[in-house]
Length: 245
Image (cartoon, rainbow, N blue to C red; front, top):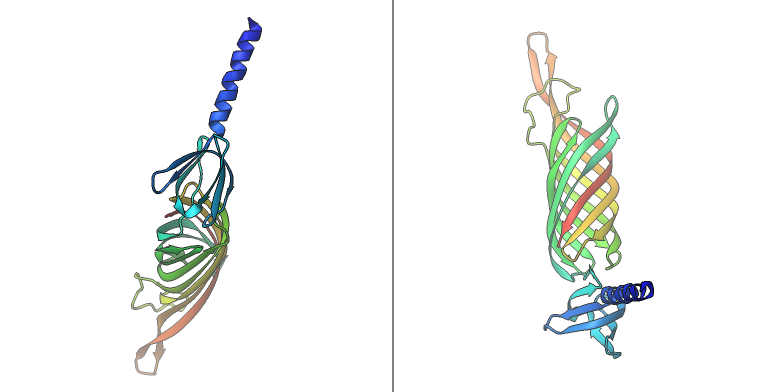
């Protein structure tokens, strides 16, 4: 009796494991193939051993979806629009102590092969001021697999919409706008072909233009004249976000 029960359990486990190991490939024309995938190259070929023993070679560009056993496999999109949202910290030296500032950025653009080209904006804090950046973003991922390292470059302008027209304190931060640039390295991990987690670290540079009103006594009255200033900020950049294809 015990031997019979053990045999039944063994057979059920074997059937379950075989079912889990069966790969299912669905093509864009509706064709379905079942078997075991032995090779898959994005924008290349897919080779699988079918359940009836035959070997089948397919074009990866014809694949609509892959089911590797019970897990949905990743299929890289060649091109299309994308949106990326990320939040993180800007770390650097301040006037009296180190600054740890908040940033939120979003980029909308177009993907083509391994390149992501987009326009970005968001909110960033620096020297207790709320800045709004507007920039171009170029990202390159080094592989088309589920997990890939990438490099990203940003270049644009940042604006302080709360800029005060009149400030008479030389030490007050009264930035109006300025140039900004950034370079980041990170890792992109795809949950599926539509959603990915992005983690990055890098460098952010600001050339902020500001002004303050200076006063001078000419012997009869106080004269006020504006003084233009520039402040250069260097920040270490840490970000975590999501990318939607």
